[in-house]
Image (cartoon, rainbow, N blue to C red):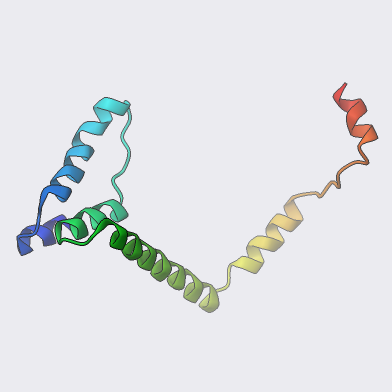
Length: 107
């Protein structure tokens, strides 16, 4: 995304701020946090002049596209039923008590 912005001549203050946060936050927080695609996309779109309220719509579209990809994959190669059956076999269900036994055990 940064390379594309450079090639298009659109790297502006939002992308530069995004990069600066990436450089300085480890020293401030004491740990490294990854800068994600949603952040760089938001910064790039802000540099293109989109209003902040519109950026939320772009993020929603990106999430929806990802969800559609997961749904398509699940339809082609279902994993959900297998995961459910494995969990169902591995975990023993214990119904909640009637309350009296639970209160005695807590004392």
